[in-house]
Image (cartoon, rainbow, N blue to C red; front, side):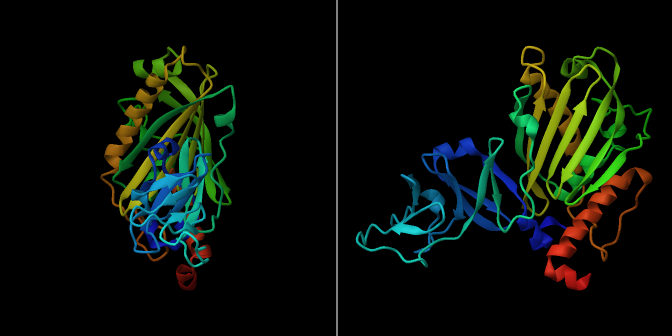
Length: 338
């Protein structure tokens, strides 16, 4: 299964772009084959509309914001944040009817990004209390395109068995390939995994953690918010909290928009943001090389041939089962076949 195979995945929130990008004017964005225009009013209200004028189908993303409306570049028709046409310059005394509109979609600003949901959402955008806690700082890390499947990334978020091999240059130890046991908790729309993990702490990691020993232990908790968000909470023995929040937006078959931030309870003087980003970049790029080599299709549904597995795959299999349950419960096409 690929994320585009079921309409239920249109009912979740996805990051589109940094909200600051809208300062330059309306911006195009495509999600699940829906062509959108994202724009904001002078008071900061963000809107997501279909990127076609209802008059002669010109792209609204080529237009401009006029007060609290977006104006079509072709004939100047103006639309409000809900998609209703409010002014036709060629007919100044005419009030456009309710049918004179373009489709609007739900949009929110959270953590510095515009999030979009195409249908009635099944869940809220994940809450990150640390992001608004004065004892923490937020560091924006990545917002870039990866050529891989969203569901393969979900596998990776829970995969402790790959660390010794893929991350041998940063935090893995090839001589200890057996991952520690983990505690698993099934959530209504997700999975949580927690355990203690011993990792290598080489020179770059020492600068990142403030720990001088060659090894250290992570108190690790991963919370997956189906289908596309992950919060990795890491507590170190010296009191450092390093929290990684990652979200992926499906752009096409085998292509995602990868967005990540980290949240830390230290200061810029202790560990510069540049150093934190550099280490997370090294680790992330080790994953990226492997993940971009995997197949986009992931066996989730009962009629798909399963892949071989091992005991360390328990969390991944729980996540795949959760995806299957979401599809079967909310997509009529698969419910009939279930």
